[in-house]
Length: 343
Image (cartoon, rainbow, N blue to C red):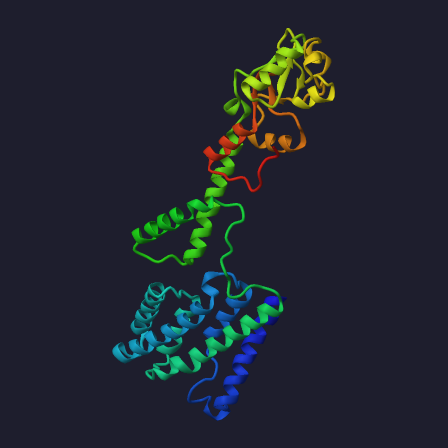
C-alpha cells in the first residue's frame, strides 16, 4: 500500500503543479503531464532501491531520451523508422551516461510518434515532471522511513579492510574489460563481489575439520604422572593445559595451573609428592575429530580449558586444538574474527 499511495501522490503533485503553472488552456499546445512519468512512478515508489529508480536515472533517462526523440524527428521525420531509431539511440545514450531508466524508451516514443520537433518539450514537461516526481519520492520515502535515494551499505561481515583497495582495483579492471555498462551501479557491483567473497569464506570454514588444524603430537601426561614432573612441563613448553590420559589413550582429565593453585600443588613441598590424578579436573570438554571448525569457536568461549582435546570415535586422544590453531585457520580462509577469542 505504501507504493500505491506514493505513486498516486507523486503523479498528483507533479500534475497539479504543472497544470497550475501552464493552465488548462495550454494543455492542447503542450501537455502538462507525460505518460512515461506513470511508469517512472511505479519504479520509484515500488522499487526505490533499484538502480534504475534512482534520481539521476529518472531525470536523466527521461529528459535525454526525449531530446534524442526530438533529434530523430528533425532528421528522419515522424514515422516507424524514426521511432525505432529514437528508442535504440535513447537506450545507447542512457547506457553511456549511466542513467538507464525503462521509461526513457517511452519518452523517446512519446516525442517521436506525434512528430514533436521542439527541444523545449524535453525541458517542459519531461524534465519538470521528472524532477517533481523525484522530489516527492524523496520526501515520501523519508516520511515512510524508506531509504531513497538508495545508498550502498558496506557489508558488516565482509572481507578484511586491508583487502578493500584490492577489491576496488580488481572491480575497476573487470568493468573496464566489458564493452557495455552494467545496469547496476558500481557500489552495487562491489556489494555483490563482497557478498560472493563472504560466501566463499563461509564455504571454506564449513569444509575445515578438527583433523585439518589440530596438533597431532600433543604434550600429555597420565593420571600417574608425578605432580612435580607435570609442573615442570608447563615451564618448559609454555603451555596452558595438559590433557590427562589413561593406559588406553582415552582422555580422563585435564590439568591447568589453576588446578595446582587450588590444591597448593605449586609449593615445592607439595610438588615433591602425589600424582597428577589427584589434582586434575575430571570434567573434560573434548571434541570429535570430524567436527567442523565453526563448532569449536563457541567452545573456547564457554570453557576455561585450553587446548581442546580431540578424540576419535573410541574416545582416544588423537590431537589438540588451541586458540592459535583456530586463528591460523581463520586467517588461511581469509576471515577476520569480529571479536577476539577469550584468552
